[in-house]
Each structure stands twice: as C-alpha cells, then as structure tokens.
Length: 280
Length: 292
Image (cartoon, rainbow over all chains, first blue to last red; front, side, top):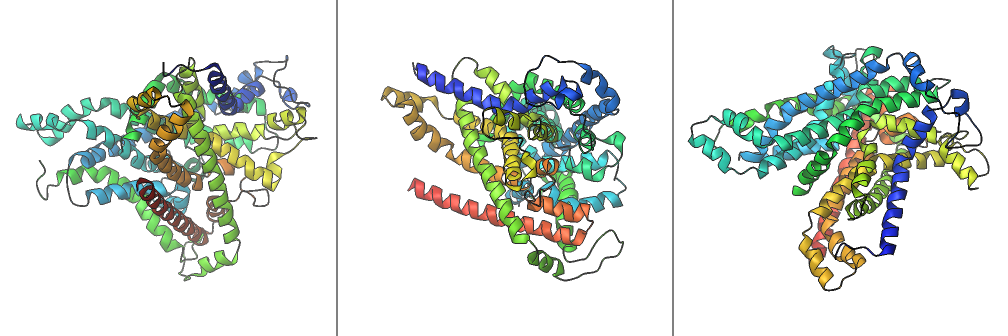
C-alpha cells in the first residue's frame, strides 16, 4: 500500500531517527552519566561514556551542596502556575472578543498584540527594571510573574482565538434567544465547549513559562529564596570549583516534574498546538 | 449580534490590554525616551540629544550587528532544515514513531537555562563529551576548549541554539504536513509517483507557507535570544559571541548605563523591524511570482 516502505527506505528513516535522537538526547545522557560519578571521576582523561564506578552519592549530597533545591523547584512551579493563571485571565476574554465580535479597529488591535512577539523581553529590560523598582516589586515573586505573563499573552490569544473561531455561532444565538446574558453565555455555554482548547493553551503557556524563567529572575530578583530553578542553579555554575556531578543531578531532578507533565500530556500538546497553528 | 458602540467586546480586551500596555507598550515608549538621556543609577538624568547614538555608531556597532545577523541566519537556517527533516521523520508511518515523537521534544520542554548548563559541560575541553569523542576518533589531537576560542564559541552557541529551537520547528511543520489532504498523495501514488517525487511536488509546496512563517518567527526569537549565549560565554571570548541583545544587556544592566543601553535597544528594534519588513515583502513577491 501507499505507506509500505521498501527496506532501504526503512534504513534511511531509522538512521535518520537515530541521528536525530542522538543530537537531541546527548546532553541528557551525558548529564545523567556525570550525575552518577564521584566528582574526582568526573574529571577523567581520556573521556569515557560508561564506567564501572557509578554511584548515587551525588543525588544524596546535592541536597546539602544546593541547599535551596527543593525551594527552587517549588518556586519554578509556583511561578509558572501564577504566570499561567494570570495569562489565561487575559487571554480567554480577549481571544473571545477577537473571534466573535465585529468592531472598529479589531484587526488593528489584534495585529498590535501579535506585534508584541517582535519585542524581546531583553530589549525592554531597562524600563521594566525601573518600573519594578518604582512599584516596589523588585525582589518579589511578582517581578517574575507579571512580565512573564505579559509576554505569553500574544501567542496565547492567537492560539485561543483559532479555537473560538471553530465553535459554531448557533450555540450563542440559541443562548441569547433563551434570554441569557452575554457574560453568562460566555461562562456557561462557550467556555465548557472550548475546554479542550483552553487545556492546550494552558499547557503551552505553562511550558513556555517554565522554560523561560531566566532573564527576569536574574535581573529583577536577588533574594535567593525566591529564585526559580534555572537561576538558583546558575549561581552554582558560576563558581570557581563547580560540583558538576551534583549540579547535573540537581538539574535532572529539577526537570523531572515538567518532563512527567509533558509525557502524560504530550498527545494533547502535539494535537492541540498543531491544530491551532495550522488553522491560520 | 453586536450593536454599534457596544462596549462589551472592548471590555473583554481590558485585562490583556492593561497588562500589555503596562509591561510592553509603556516600556517601549520609555526606551525611546531614555535613549536620548544620560540616565544611569543617579536619580537625575538630562537629555543629551543624539549623543548615545553617535557614541554607538563610533563604536563597534556595525561589527556587532553583522555578527548578530550572521548568528541569526545560521541558527535559523539550521533550525529550518533540521526541523523539516525532523518533521518528515516524525510523519513517517513506521513502528516506533510514537516513541520518537515523545523523545524529540525534551529540549523544548525543559527550562532553556538547564539545557544550556548541560551543553556547557559537553563543551568542556578537558573532560567533555564532544572534545573526548573527537579525540578518540582522531578529529582533534588534544583537548579542545570549545568556548575559549572565538570561532569555536560562535559555532558552539549556534549549535546549542539549534538544539533548543529545532523541536518546535519540527512539531509545527509536522502539523502542516498532517493537514495536507491524504487524497493528494493517493492520487499521486496511483499515478506511480515515487515517494521523493511526492515530497517535492506535494508536501514541500503545501508546507512552504508554514516554513516561511516559522522562519520569520524563529528569526525573531533567535535575534532576541539571551539565555543561551549568556550562560555559555556571557558574550565572550573577546566579544566573539556578543550579539546585540547581549551587548544591550551588558551596557544597561551590568554597567548601569541606562541611556546608552536604551539606544542600543532601540537599534535592535530598528534592525528587527527592517528585517521583518524586508522578509515579508520578499515573501509576498515570491509567492505572487510562484502563483503566476
């Protein structure tokens, strides 16, 4: 049939997959190997990937050499959750407005939102710093949450809008005929129907928020207890003598939660992101 | 359904608009204003006209800009090429595909900074994997510290950037491929078209718009990329990986020269706008030419 591959095609496909995965997974594999070695064995010449002196000591010692590790992981989760909630509160109504109503300047406003994607966070770092300073938000969680949410709103609106566009208008019209108010209709009729889309936007926003907690935390926060994982660990990487094995162990443990989230929800993510992306 | 002058749709925009105005629009305007001042940590700043800009242009601005565009161009090209190959592989109907789809995405899922920590170990000259393996197969004679030499560091930061960015490109292009109607392939297959021919004549033309879009988005993200270079090299060695973003950050945050930093930030926006404008104009012309 059409999908039957000849043997040499299969060889090419599997070779390609293997090479691709080697590139993608090499850092993780090597980090894992380093995390299983005593420090003096990490610095070994010549290089070997597998050795017989593996130990899980780094996974025990890291809690003392990176004392805030628990705190960093929880911070990362907390910040990402807060960013996601704040962003969704902005994304959902705005996306609904863009998808359902006709009004003056609608396309202009939408374009303006999408243009925000052009502006990198680092470009605005000076006024943002001054803004956070004058609002007294420096060295608080808010300094990491609010900017993080603001920069994830445009993409979220874009994705969410394409979901709302696919919901038939008749649904709302029926509710209006029954005398429902528009806010009630949005809450009780539209949102339940759009739930799969909301799930996808939630996951996508969460992952983006989790992946990008570096710049704001590095710049706006100097309180160790509030650091998210990347910045918390970055402090240890900058040292004279880096405990590579324990830091790799800490990194791997730190990303485990989000990897779990991803593996369990990946069907959703792939299907959802792609459905939203292709539509336009 | 919507009455003229009806406030409801506007009210729905309020939260998003408020947040965006406060965190993006106002800082944007403020950046422009600051770029004409000598603002620093001192409380009072005065307007200095175009001094900041003149200072930038007298310095190494053109060098940094050339480097930034080269960095972006190489990174985006590699991401698009590898992303397309990845999407084709992800789309292949072979056993094990589900696993492949799961295993390809981690660089996108984990915090960028953490992924880069791992890379910084891989690049270690004495004990790292890349230098070690290259020595074993005889590509290099002795330990090679990738991040210590300008050209090697430049390429190393690009490789890491490609690693971070490729999964999303692949996923996006996979989506584009899956939205192509199956009938097209079946019709071509019935006519005896080979797999390669079907890819060239059906897949590629139909995902071309997605590739153009993704290339633009990817270019903007790459241009604005901060974490990767900052963690690997902080712009070094000897400025070899200092892109415009790194340059701006160093000027403004590390040296507290807010005014000059703002001027550099404005130049980033000018460059990006010019680039995006040229790109879109070129693509529109190209597509019009193709459809004729």
